[in-house]
Amino acid sequence: MTFMKAALALWALASAFPALLPGETIPAAPTSGLPGPESRVRFLCSVQAPYGQWGPFTQFISGLNSSVYSLVMTAQQKSQWSNYSKRADSDWKGLQARYLRRIDNWRDRSLRDSQTGKVAFYPFGGPDAANLLAFFPDVREYILLGLEPVGCVPAGLADYTRDYFSDLRRSLESVTTLGFFKTNDMRRDFAQSSVNGVLPLLLFLVGHAGYSVTDVTAINITTAGVITASTNQLNGETRGVAIKFTDGRHGMRTLRYFSLNLLDSRIRNKPGTLKYLGNIAEANTLIKDASYLMHTSYFSIIRNVILSHSSMVVEDDTGLPFRFFERTAWDVRLYGSYAEPIHLFGRWHQEDLKAAFIARADERPLDFAIGYRRRDESSLLVATRRGK
Image 1 (cartoon, rainbow, N blue to C red):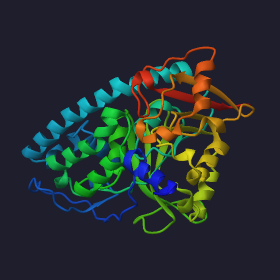
Image 2: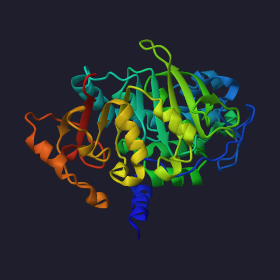
Image 3: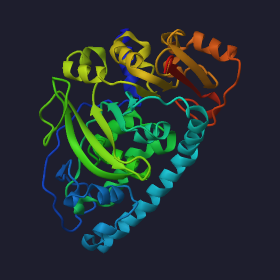
């Protein structure tokens, strides 16, 4: 097996960066009716909330509040939603206890005076809005990249059955238990379940993070590098979705997810998307569970985008190799403890990073697991551009 084939095989096995190419959605006007049978059915769906209300719908699909739809839900559907709501609440509280609250505390101690970026950028994040919002809660614009298609949500309220909610929880299971999405899990779930693409996952995570969603729009990056709205996602160069959300402290903000293969040979064929990425300025960049892809020569373009356009990079050891943070350009702080990569990625040991951990003058703890390691074996690197 050639080195490139091996690298791509590892990516497919363990990356949090999804491994499906975009699929088509079927636009449809909202409909309503009685819930169908419990067996999975093929239903119409679109980037359009039932009855056109994204705020109440996000609360509904997140398991937080169903009151807006209560008059058109059957007794059976209310019971199914209630059971889903209890389980979703338990899932979220588990994620908060294991990761999100710990990240909040660490961020307040470690990043309070470092966040100078205007954009939060998560190039290998897939639909993992939870971690991006936790690490960078104060910016105005969020950009996530993943291979997963945007997908859609069922257009008819009747399609939100026990099976749909069960499939949605299963799609979210790895992030709520491990803190990141698994490639194989998402590929399986989207192929075999009624959940179509990342849109419902994004809404769940944004809703549970405490934000009010006001609008969702299908978007594209054009060949000119401009973002435009799209009604059918058929035009443009790179497909995505924009989620507008708000809270009492920050006002209106936007999260954009783009379905994009960051392999050099693929992204070179998208000049408009390269232009868009090149226009990202002063980014706070998060890289975690990235399968050491940027340690290879096949992901040099996105590596250079990050190094050129980030004010700060927060990453585990699966992200940018330590040697790329030149001391004349970056101030680097290390947290936790360096451990050898897991066996699957054993070749990506970084002797220089290990030496830097040993030589550091002060020990900065990390009380949560990140990457592919346990808490006592996890590390974070925070690189801040000098002069910022």
